[in-house]
Length: 368
Image 1 (cartoon, rainbow, N blue to C red):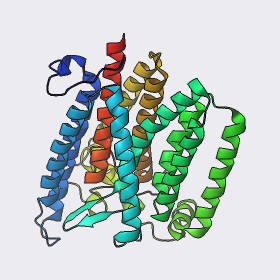
Image 2: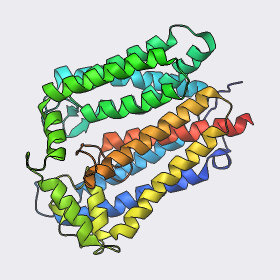
Image 3: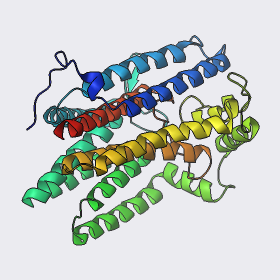
Image 4: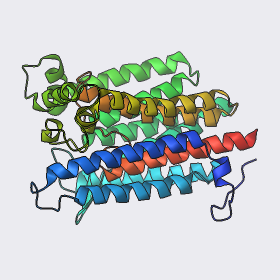
């Protein structure tokens, strides 16, 4: 039975919450604040805004994120589905608005801007689509109806919007996680093979029609193609930091990276805190992922298993993409490191993911 939970009347939040995931999330927030404090020193006098503005805004993101996690973790499964549907529809509308009604920024139409505020609505697609996909897959397994094709339709809409923006990296991320969802659901291979072939076709079309996609892939495989300034500085940062780092605020190479506060913040961590601390942060992310995986494998509820694994995968894949880009393992992609990088849209998305995960784990425990 699904019971509606009133957050204001629920006095057992601490006893019901998964403390390991909550504490590790708080650790990531702390690492982010430390990194942003260091970056502030480097920004002094470089821009027209006060040097402590990024840190202040990041602290606001932390507070908002904690509120989101706290509120979402208290709702029921039924409310989770309603909230996800609302967020999904809202993000689709906002993505359309960003493409057609807001100016281009850095060669893409991903952001909605209002005065000094900017928001990337596609970030909200990640947690909401994973939940809706889990719902539709569950319905398909029980009734064998149109639900799976509705799931594919949702993916097509999302993919079309992301490619139009364009945000090829987000498209790859969402598709990869969705594909794992359907593979783990034992969907007939006769359905899966055409989906994979369609993805390959879309990938090739994007490679030949989107210049930035072609450039990044070619630049990765052939270093003489284009400018490798950012990735070279990133690798130099890790080398300069060594095992124990130069100390907080003492980094000199990573801070010359234009995107050190977002896409390349792991390079700053590597230089100032060292390889040991960088590995520790990776361990925190892995601990969250493993914890979710262990709990999901013990559940007999198909929806909870599919939703938990999907949310865990989209969270850890983003981590892998960010860190791998910094280490030149994969082509560079403008994707933040969850809870550590600066960026309100990504911070809200990551908070929703963790809030949903804590909700699902709580419901799984209460069902036993």
